[in-house]
Length: 274
Ligand code: NAP
Image (cartoon, rainbow, N blue to C red; front, top):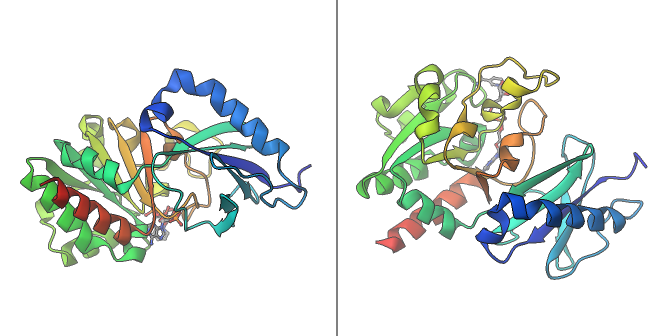
């Protein structure tokens, strides 16, 4: 049944606690995926939706045109407005993977109370032109007593020095920018690694998967941070065209949406915390 698109199921979770307990999660996750596969049609169209279950079709293993449906309303990848604290479960190449979304409100609380935040900008920040909102968010965290540093991968973005140029344009102090080699040994101390539109440069497959096309490429080891929040629009791949297991690790939360729009929400939420 290779022509059938890989089925994906999103199971809306009522609370974050329900989706973060790894041991208790394993069995429900399997059950959800089986349901999704069983309800998948020959054309890959979403067939079965109820208020708690979202079934997704995903053509090809590279995750191109992902479509999904929320309560019967079909949407395209890039508009994942499925609300807060949603668990994403799908089967891809026989593997079970779980990515968990977070609301801007919950992400803001996490950032507001973090002492050590590392921002990782990538191509998506450039696309969204979100550098000014990055600075605004960082200043709010700093005012609350947190430290914010920026981890710069040498090939982040699409041209050499791309991230440095954008961050400088937003008047982010240069001494807060750290090269990959300078910060990698320290990432395990970060309370939050905040990934803003980066993908390939934080893909742990470069370290762990000898079959990956990026195996051996030095990456920012954000998977070692205490928690990870990823700002991107959906589950699309980056330049290298490969999936990223970082997005499915238990300590990672996905804040879906355009990076600038998400940062504006984070800033608003943190200001509201006073
Ligand atoms: P990346 O792997 O290309 O990923 C960028 C991510 O940004 C995408 O997965 C995309 O996901 C997200 N995105 C796009 N628009 C967005 C928006 N408006 N808001 C939020 N997210 C958005 O980027 P990277 O981690 O920076 O890695 C750079 C890649 O480019 C590397 O593979 C590198 O080798 C290659 N490259 C670099 C250079 C250079 O000189 N720097 C030159 C050529 C190639 P969604 O679509 O799901 O949002």
